[in-house]
Image (cartoon, rainbow, N blue to C red):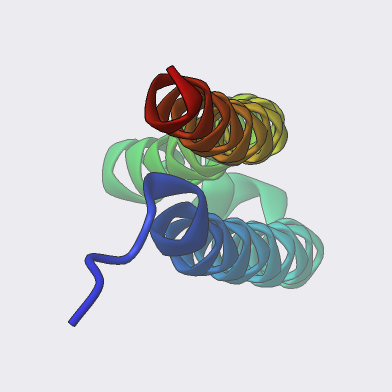
Length: 115
């Protein structure tokens, strides 16, 4: 049984990272909406209270972190996509080189048989 090539095994990894990025972005958007609703619904005097203010700040920091992670994951996805393409080309070149080598070996064998 042939071992799957790296170019064949990377696309599922890329798909998973793209799905993870979409999930992170969706959560970041949801958190943004929740933060905006909380800011609008909580009266200003309550917002100024230490615990509420700290919770709102922490929630916004988490949202910023989710956005940053999604951006980093996007960079990883792009790098993975480039690597998949590069490896597919390399594997195609390798396959062609192996075929050329087999042809050359056959020609050499024929030439040796004729001498």
